[in-house]
Every structure is written in C-alpha cells, then in structure tokens.
Length: 465
Image (cartoon, rainbow, N blue to C red; front, side):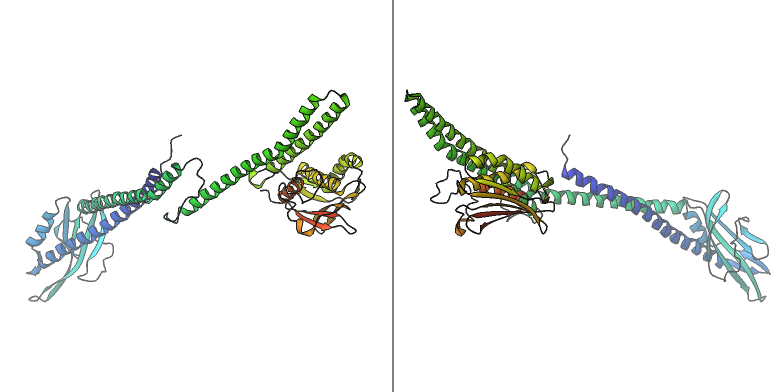
C-alpha cells in the first residue's frame, strides 16, 4: 500500500473546495456581468431613443422623423448584433422603422420615461427600449403622441458578459494557484519541527531511554512528544522489571544451588546408605524450596503493573473459592500441626479471576501455617460486608509488629530474627492480586494474640490495568 503524503492530502482537501468555490463564483460573476452588460447597453438604447426623439417634429400638420447622425452612429457601433428601431404615432400611422417591432404590453406609462423589456422578434429574443413622447407644434398649436422604440439582439451583451467572466475566472485561477502555493509552502515550513523530531528519534541509541525534549517544539507537537515520553517510560519500567526479575531469580537460586551442590558432593562421598538417604532427603527439601521460590518469582513478575496482564473478569463466589483452597491446604496444615478451619456459609460474589483468587488465598494460608507454628490455629473466614466480599485469614501465632506491617508486602522482605524458612514473596503476590481486583488489604492484631489479614473485594466490576 503506497504511503500517504500529507502534502498531497492537504492539496486535494484544499483544491476540491476551492474548485467548488471557483465554480460558484463563476456562476455569480456571469450573472453580475450580464446585469452590468444589460445596464450598459440599456443606457445605450436609451441614448439612441433620446437622439431619435430630438429628430421628431410636426411640419404642415404631419409628423416628420429625421434620424440624427448620433443615433445612426450608435446603430452602426453594434457590430456583433442587429439593431431595430420604430417610430409610430399613438393610435395613428407608422412613421419609420420596423413596423412589426412589438410595443410594450403596458401603454399607459409616463411620458419621457423609458421602459425596457424583452420580446420575441423573428426568432430572436431582443431587448427593447421604448419611450412615449409628446411632440408639440407651436405654430399650429398641435400636440401629438409618438412611440419611439429601439431594440437589439443580445450578442453584444453576451460577448461583454463572457469577456468579464473570462477575466474573472483567470484572476480566480491565479489566486487559487497562489493560495495553494502559499499553503504548501506553509505546510513545508510547518513540518520542519516534525522532521527534526523524527530525526532526533531516529538518531537515538537503542539503550537511550531519556525523554525527548519538547521545549522548542510547537504546542501542537507537544502531546505527541508527551505520549512518546510516556511510552519510553513504560519501556524503561518494563526493562527495569525484567532486570530486577533476573537479579531476583539469581538471588533466589544462588544459595539453593550452592547448597544442592554441597549436599550432592557430600552424598557422593558417603558409603553408609542411611546417611546417603538423609543427604538425598535434605537435597530434595532444598529443591522444593528453590522450586517454590522460582514459582513465586514467576507469579510476581506476571502480576507486576507493567506486565500488561489481560485480566478477564467473571462472577466468582469468593466463599466457594476460599473453601476449596482451605480443603487443599488441610493436609499440609495437619502435617505442620496446625488446626486449619473454615467459616463461611453465605455466598460472597465479586467480579474477578478464579485462579488468581485461589493463589491469593493459598499464599495467605501458607504464610499463616508456616509463621503461626505447630499447635496453633488458622481460620479462613468469608462473608459479604456492606458492598464488599470480605476474606479474612486469622491465626493466633506471634503476629507482626505494627511498624513492620507496611514493609512485609515488599519483595524479599523478612522480619529480622525470623527463623521460619521462606523467600519473602508470598505477601507481595497477595498485594499484586489484590491490586488487580481493586481490593484493599489490612493487617491487624488478632484478639488474644496473632495476626488477622483482611482483604475487601468490591462487588462492582473493577477496571483492569
């Protein structure tokens, strides 16, 4: 598909309306030219009539018409068309000229005042000027009334109107061409900042993620530059997250791999089978720990804000999800000596993603079992509360000091002195899943000792990132 040229697009967008305006202007100009030509030639006809009137007199009781030289000269000047004239006595005899030249339909017009009209004459539409004139003879005290008519075919009028129209069209075409030239020149000059911006973006190195400078750019280009800078910032965050992920993965795997290597080397040196089995069992536990840490890292990376995870929401019963997860973790709780219980009989509906909610509940139960310790109780509770679906995981373990509660959601953060094996990622995953569901998390003290984690999910559809 050929690339679209902005200059060509603007030319077409401007040329079509200008051509339409030129056509409309041509029609209006032609009408104005005809009106001007009619006015000019009507004055010429009237002048001819007045000249002929001056040659009319009464001699010996008869009306005599002597056409003056001025009138004849005017008749001869109309070389493009034909001129007709007629002088007739009102209600009397024809005096001179073309006897069938039509009189005006109204015969009661005022004396000495010209009347202009169009009439069909020998297959042509001619323009006629008529004057109703009184002729006086002082000697005989007679007053007679005559009609003086002068008509012409329209060729001269059309020729003059066409000359005016052609001149106007040529002038308009020149103006349109100049206007297009000026617009294209302005577009070319106006696009220079865009070309400079394009060159600046093209010359950027692949690892240059500095924002573009928009101080010297026109205001119309600043939204584009701001959008590009936002995009660059998102790319930088994504790259930083990827780098942090690899660093975190190296951090998580470095110690377990070193331990694995050491334990395997020790096992290879042992000849006693029970000791080898013990070393293998310890190695397996280390592998499980490393595997769990890697899975948590992958989950946390997938849930990061700049991962652009497309979350498809559906109606989910939080009570049912939490009950199933609690049943899955019941064997683990028994092996750890923890009494795991579930409370919740009322359906608590929300809009969410079931597998993410299962992971959230599982991480909370896992944390509670490991940190509460043997002989303790962990309760999972679900209920609808004032427009929210509330999930609570309650334990009677050692709890978390109030000053540490905001920090435990950070990656790899572990409270000083904690002896429980872990990676410090579980609550971070819980926090990201809650963010995707527009939920709020609160850590509080359990009455009698322990920690209560409360997650409130809005019942309304959340907005996906």
